[in-house]
Every structure is written in C-alpha cells, then in structure tokens.
Image (cartoon, rainbow, N blue to C red; front, side, top):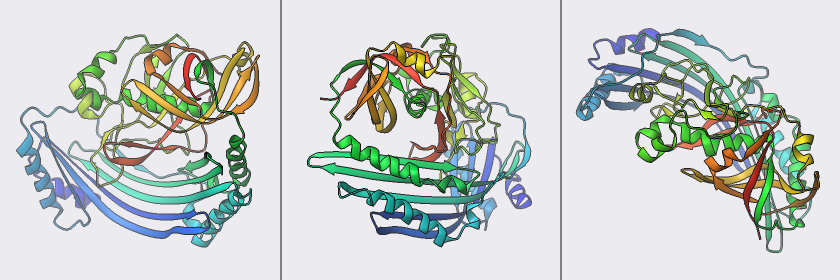
Length: 454
C-alpha cells in the first residue's frame, strides 16, 4: 500500500498533498422494545486526496485505488481554482509509524449471535420493570478500521483501530409525566465494556421510574454540584468548542472573547485536551494530518493559555499545532476537533464540597443540551436536592442555563476525584457526527447557577 500511495504523490505540483485510505468492518444491532430495528455486518473501503495550492484546498474521495494519480491531479486542479493567497501550514517533522491497538477482548472474536443475545438481555431488563416503561431502545455497535495515511512532507502512518459502543435507554411515563434515562458505554480496547452491565441498565431504568413521582424543581438560583460526568460534558460542550481555532478564524467576536491571557476563573481551574486515556474514543497518537497529539492546556490556573489547532489554523494564528485535525471517516476532510477534554482535579473532597450548602442541587450527567456561542443549556439526567449539607430528595425537570464565562468564574471548588468513565461521546461539527471523543472531570461546585423548573 505504501508504494501505491507514494507513486500517486509523485509530481503532484501542489504546495501540499495528502492521501488517506481506510478499510473497515462494522457491526450494528439495535432493538426498539422487543422489535429488532437493525442487524448488520458490513465492510467498506475508500479514501481521499486533499491538496493545497495558493491557500486553496481541493478534496476528492474515492472507493477504488484505480487511477489514483488522476484523483491526486483532480484535487490539485480544484485547489488551484480556488487558491488566491499563500498556503499556510505549520511546520511539523515528518513521522513514519505503525500503530496497533493493545486489545484486551477483540469484538471480532465474538459471534454476531452472542452480541445480539446481549442486546436482548438488556432489553428484557428494561421492559421487565413494569408497564410504566413506555418504550426502550438498546443499541450496540463495533468497528475495526485500518487507515493508511501519507503526505507530501514525508509522513507515513499505518493505523489499526477497534471501537465498541452501546446505549440503553428507557422512557417511563405516568399520565402526562414522561421521564427518559439512558446508559452508554464505549471502548477502543475491550469488548468487555459491553458485558455484565445488567445492574447498571436496571439502575438506569429504575431511576427513570423513580423520577415519575419526584417533584419538579423550583426555578431559581442555586449552588450546584455537578458530578464528574456532567463536569466533563460542560468542559467539552460549553468551553471546548469555543477553543477550536478554525471557528475563530470565521468569527471576529469569538476571537475577541478568547484572547490568550484572559482570566476566566480561579487559580484552581485547569482545562485540558488530549489526555492519554486507554480505551477512550478520543485517545489518538496522531491526528488526521499526521501531527502528534500532546496534552494541550486551554486554561491553566484560571487563565486562557491555549487553543486547539490544525496545521493551517496554527500557521494563521502564529501558534503551535496541537494535533486536533480530525475527520469522521474518509468521506470528510479533517477539521479542528477535540479529543479527550477534561477539567483537572483539585484538592477538595466531595464531603467538604457539600457540607456547607444549606440548599442546593446535586446534578448527575446530562440527557441533552445545546450551546450557542457563550450561552449553554443542559438538561440533567438525574438531580437531587441538597439540604443542610446532605443529599436529599430526588427532583426532576432540572435545566441548567448560563453564560460559560460567568459559570467558569463561579466554580468555587473542584474535587479531588477525577473520573474517566468507560464511555464517551459522539461529537458533531461541520456535518461530521458522531466523532468519538472523551470527556471527564471531578465533582465541581458552581455558585449562583440558574436552574429552570416549575
């Protein structure tokens, strides 16, 4: 393969060219209640050429290596048609590497029948908990991909990757009250992440049922403690996307907000991207431009010190590349995306964090939300009142709303209990979704948090 791709690059006539070829095998199983929605095992092959000329880009995807040199020439012609400036790419030392996953239990060694049986078991658990369960959905998927990457700077990377993912969701209903809940898992090294989750599926379903009788939270401003899952989602959704430098190039207002050196929080606040977490969907050695991924501080001791870059955005902003150019698959060009984003742990125990709260909220995970610029809204998966320093009754209908910069300033305690769950997210941007990412954090305490309810 390396010889084929190297030959196709000869005499390309562009400022820069890269070729990515991908072979894949995928399994998908899903049930809605006890009805089988999907059962498939597929394989695929394809690739793309991306070329830069005078600051313009050309992109060609394909499903055959036939006439590959002509595809390179087509991408170069496209780039030449739109290029009107100078191609700017941050300098990166070329690498030659081969990456093989250290798989604990390979999903390819498990029969389709056994995978289907596991999904059915989780479905049975959800539906066995009573007729207040209006519906359920359980899905499982896995993939194996082999990616060959070469560029005109001399980089050659041969990567194999395994990914396992799943979700179980229950929707409980009583009269006009509807309460959904869900449970997810994922891993890049172990099919075992899908096994023996029966107790967690049962607990997730029971929480949905318990929420039916829970009172709706009273709207107001509360001191809120976010659990590690919600902390990670906040770091990713509310702040991580603001740190993606390709968006800044198109948004002058965002550039004014995200000025390096600006203080966003106390000295206890640190937010990073790029943790090397075994099994996490966001753990990569190189991005899709062949740039090594290293931990990148976004906020250090409360001050904005970095952002996430592709080679092009780094060159345009005069900063170092961070290894964050990622593509969903060969049908897309890479754009700036997060990997594993997290709030670093502090030194406060959960007991100390909660002890002096007279009335507040303990919020667990998120079942949805949205961000628009610096404003966010998250819908809590579960929530409990805090009364006189203790976890009290369950409440429902908790929506957290705020300005991300104000919220960062209002984080007044960060826990010592950083936790990376065996799950991840599917991030969406630029039509590329779901790209595997990871997010995590410890418990955090947020003062003066706006909570919507009744």
